[in-house]
Image (cartoon, rainbow, N blue to C red):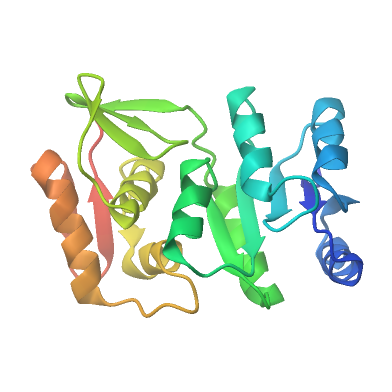
Length: 218
């Protein structure tokens, strides 16, 4: 069965470019230019992935996704944005976004990130690990219903390890997940985020030397 995508991009030329590229890669695409049309289609169809521009007429992509998440729609979502400030990116992840690419978009990178998200389909919202509960949509870690301190990249790392379901997640996969192509990833920075998680999960996270990390969830 073909993978079905909803593309929301108000730049008509870029919309058509993306649609042509993704159709050539074998995806089935519904494309729209405004968030109201996108919302209508989500009521009528089931999609495997959303690609949402952020700056849109009427309301932005973050606001649209917030509506969808509030209605129980957990479809994986990648934002395409010209925004690079951390506040905007944080907002996107807090609304339940799974990934983002800054414009101009590298189409090959977009394809890699799409395949990565489609391979992992942990869409159960709350996951319990020991005495903690992790909200996979808002990416907030709770202890007894109270949020605990965890950075954005620390939360993204936790989700990546949980999606590994006890298997090793390679260092390269983690770096691609946590850092965009415009950011510089480093082993030292990754170790900082691993150390953050080990404060809460001191015995569950293992470093497989030279390969990556895995997390025991039982």
